[in-house]
Image 1: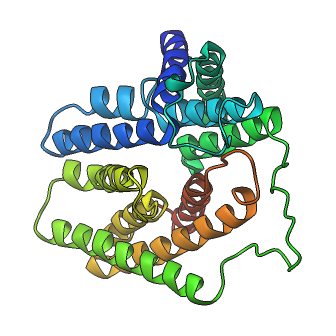
Image 2: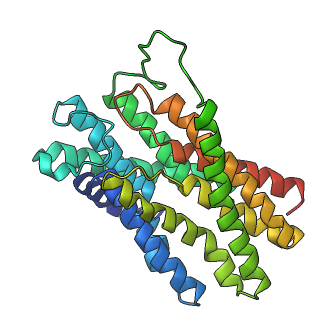
Image 3: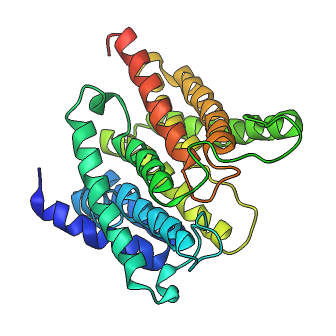
Length: 300
């Protein structure tokens, strides 16, 4: 275990709290793009990507997760109207304990990811995404009152999955993002892009989706898509390597799956609630497990 990075995770959690969970995640997206583009061109990616975008500085499990927990705590102590508000920059509350909660959850996230990484599950999934999901669950039980799946008070049966036009919308969203991501990857491969460029393409796609959330932050109806673009890119890169350009279709399948998994997780864990449990995180870590199973089945 890197004890210096563990100490740094406290600061990363405070950063997520003072900035707000979503702003910190958007910043991670910018660094992910910068670092992965540089790495695709042959530069080392460790600083911008490994240490900052996905490490103890702005790693989603640490900064975003710390911001999520801090918001949940702020809601509990009536400093924030809703503990599920991940857009709020919590430094404005003027409450040091809110920032401290972010720091504590940054450290907790570091430890959770470390433990996952040394188990058999670690190599099979996205440990950052799984940690984000688990951290949100811990925050819900520590500071919320609505339980794991929220408290539904309506008179009609609760929906655990969006149906009708909403379902079609999610499929089309996944289809569109998946086609763009997957067939650009195929085009890059066909054009003779370097292994570094191909291997860093999924991180670029993740960063793009994270950065687009700046529009969500500023009030537009822009959806989260990192749970679509990242699994799509990972599946496309594998599918193209295994089957040639036609293997890009695997990326499209995973994009649609990611979109639907995100919808299910949102309806199940992040509705009728008083804190945020991140739906894209569920979609990403589940998609990663499914892709790992496919790879093992093919002997890859």
